[in-house]
Image (cartoon, rainbow over all chains, first blue to last red; front, side):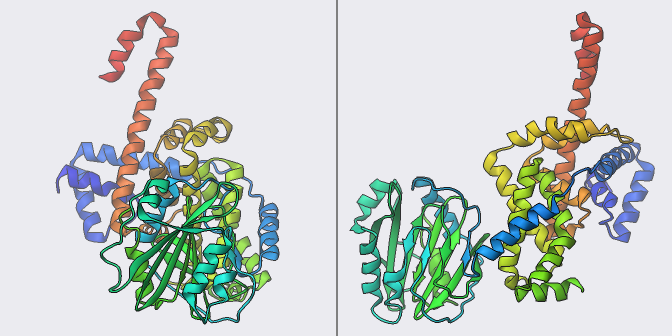
Length: 277
Length: 197
């Protein structure tokens, strides 16, 4: 065993993470190498001090539990605050760039449930009722109504690129037949805006709405189950023919409304879109 | 009640079970949060958010890891997100608030130096050393918490320990310089040269 190999294994040795043969080999080396043995003892002193250090923190158990219970009591099961949510910020370039990470990440898992229709549904400042009223009907009409109720309008790619200072591409690896149909700019009140991407193909519709990260959501009283894109956790519900999902990160909220098959097409599409941002 | 049964009860939103799960693990989560953020209010917030998220998502807990490890994963992510958002300056400042007050000499390595060196580590290295040496997690558990493989844990720990040792050596050299400089102000250059030999 070389000294370099030995030095790499001293940590695992002290952590009891070496198997018996490796341990024996290393101990044999340490017995014959003063420098490595000294390094081992030095590291043992450091790790021992780390483990034995003072721990005088008083845990405010009751105070924390009161806050948790308050949250559990006041929030219905379908109303959650997403990861990293925080006060309202202006819609800016950074959220959009972050959305690329959110959407390009791999490892997507989806869980859906069926639940009865409810008239209240929102994520952040977006009211989904106009769309959900078409959950089993004309989805395009529902999308148009959703855009309309938020004072939104269709915009061109150059306009979107200019407004948001981003490049708008239609990713090549979208599921076959699915393509970017329209871009929308929605007004959420004040200076807050959302950018909408509507994809359509034989498989169905996919509408992505990117909003500031200041959101709460209510999936219309439907049971809300967790799902994940990469390291970003979200929530999802099935409402009629629609899948309504919501993901929050530190910088952006992404609302997804889709009729795509949740097990294959939707994960593939979400992994493909915005990948060039 | 064992953890598995407790988790099952929590999945049905049983409030007593939630409280019991909280009571069993809150100390570990709070201390971990405090060690990473070095701030009591942040530790409070991280712990609160960790359990809220855990209860909201407990239906997705598949029992492939222990509930403790799963809570550590959520807590570590929450705490690291917080310190990354704020930068490390608060951790550095808090050595004055907590590190000095809480520190006591330990055999072999001076604890004040150790605390200061820990606070100068990167957030990732600081967190992984906390998980290993304060929380006592083994490599596989750390791998689960950080969502990496065990080999990555070993190499990351090696780098973290290496950085810590280097920082301790630097602190030690500086201490010698400062002490000697105070005693012999006119000999500073000579002492510096001696320390660097």
